[in-house]
Amino acid sequence: MLFMSRKKSIGANEDGFTMVEILIATVLIVSGMLAYIQFSGSVIDQNEHSKKTTVAVNRAQEKLEDLKRQALTGVLNDTTGTDTVDTVYTRTWSVTNGGSGNLSTLTATVTWNEENPQSVSLITLISQ
Picture 1 (cartoon, rainbow, N blue to C red):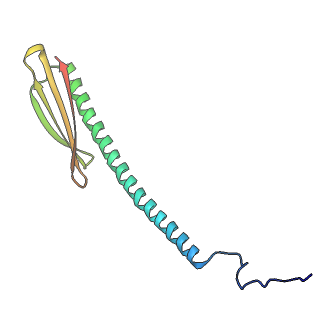
Picture 2: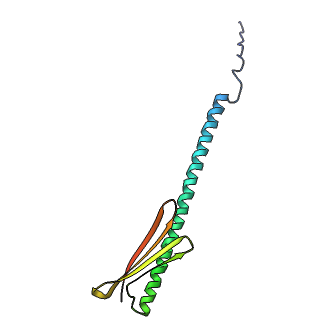
Picture 3: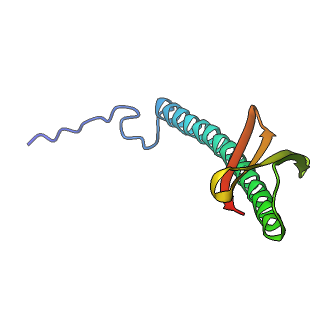
């Protein structure tokens, strides 16, 4: 019997990654990290907008509650007003007395600037 041995070709049984595999893996990791960074920046912007909107709604609600308290102590006449809250928000309000049923309409609007002017309005009716 003849015993034949095979010669191993150079590099055929070497363990490890090729440069092409490393390059592809690096591109995938870097592009994934860039997408994550871009997405997280967008989330931060949306969180900031939500925070400002929540504060604006709270400031409008505070003014409506103040007007309701005033209505309990006396009759509210048609009136309007404006003030600045927290140096960022401008709050305007109005009281409009209705004819029938002694209903008054209370409106509170809060505006602020981000990239574009933003506003929140709350309207309620009270009986006097």
